[in-house]
Image 1 (cartoon, protein in one colour):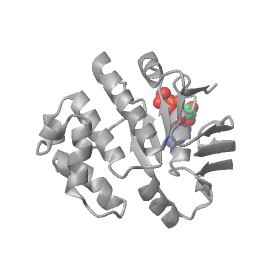
Image 2 (tube, rainbow, N blue to C red):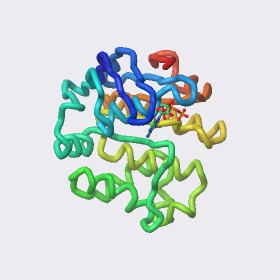
Image 3 (tube, rainbow, N blue to C red):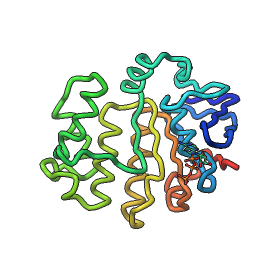
Length: 212
Ligand SMILES: Nc1ncnc2c1ncn2[C@@H]1O[C@H](COP(=O)(O)OP(=O)(O)OP(=O)(O)O)[C@@H](O)[C@H]1O
């Protein structure tokens, strides 16, 4: 469960951003909408503990993320977070399998090859195991990045504009996979998007918040 209370952030050279109070239960989802520059990526970074609030709190399953000291916060993130960023940051020096396995290693978990293959299979890209990221289509790379986010079965699943460069079919597939993974794993899902296709694919049960 994610709880935001009185949350504010200020970039050194930027505006002060204030975010609404909200709660996302485990297994539930939130669509974060708002114009470019309204603070969607900033809010995701605050929830992920990549930024520290100027005021207020982000609690994830009762943990006050901003209050964790840096090393504990890194360990917490490794255990808890699956993040599908806007730019995928797959490593081109590693094949698909190793890109996904790296998430287990970085999170301090044993590298379980079967778990990696299973999550790639679930997302329909198991046959691409030995390819390098530059040998993938945009939609395939997106699913590999999603596999990397899901392999640790995170309690918190964040996605930043996950459909931005995808055609309708791939966009629907990636949002359905996010939704399914959150439901199956009891994870709280937050999707930042201004894509109506993503909003529709998340379904009527997703909460919607529009940042001003
Ligand atoms: N590193 C930074 N330094 C200063 N200001 C920043 C920085 N990063 C973002 N901002 C400012 O903070 C505000 C929120 O930016 P953010 O990237 O969170 O918006 P967004 O809603 O995700 O935008 P987009 O939809 O274009 O990705 C904007 O006014 C932006 O210019």
